[in-house]
Image (cartoon, rainbow, N blue to C red; front, side, top):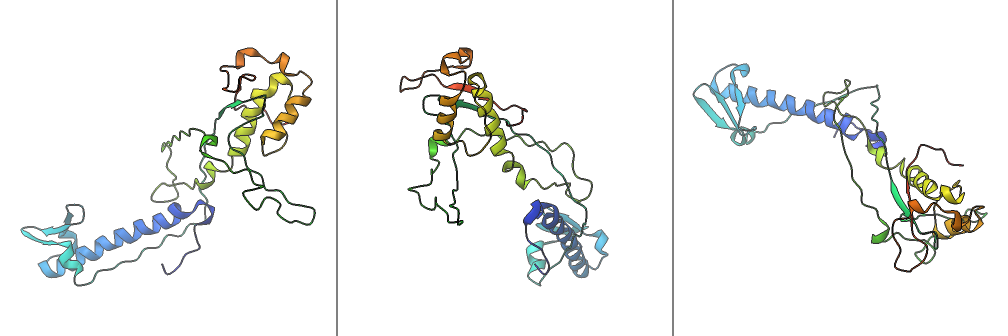
Amino acid sequence: MKLGYGSGGSRSTVMGGSALLAAAGNLQQVIRAAAAAQFGCRPEQVEIRDELRTVRAGALARSVSELAAEGLSAEGTFHNDRRTYSYGTHAAHVAVDPATGHVQVLEELLYDAQGQLLTGTLASYLLPVAEDYPAIRSISLEMFPSPISPLGAKGAGEGGIIPVGGVIANAVADALAPLGVSIDRLPLTPARLWERIQAAPSGLEHCDRTQQVKTPASGGPEPIIGQNSDRPLA
């Protein structure tokens, strides 16, 4: 690559992919010109067939690998000062154990007043394990290609990252709403949720039992099921 500015900002496919597409088109023209020189015809008379494996002009044919032995190369560039915007939504379905405050994905970086990291080792950092990871189903819809790049691609790198905290927090808030528990900060550690549940004005005895679907192995209170909602955090 002679010129490039990295892959930040979800630009890899939009910019780099479009440049590769341009380079591939230019390479086809180079292949046609090389074949035409050997066939004694015009480049536009040369057909590239068999998924770029052979070239043909009338009854004459050669393999592209034979042409490539003589040295073939092409370059392509793509410049665009307009941005592409993708769109998407996240939904979560969670179960909260009111006896322990356990939710699945847990993560927190703590610092002291001097900015020293306090959770720098696995002894103090709550590391997610296999049972903490939810089942993830991703659905991609390519219904509206972008009009500002030849691939029609849109940057979507942040789509799987940015909404996660909010969607999980809102699902937990929905599950704990019958207890009068409000969620106003991340991460949703078991200790933090347990403290909120214990301090809730309604208490566990007023929990909507229709939201409790199964009894945990511990024999404690049944998990409370919640789903993502559009309600903002308290």
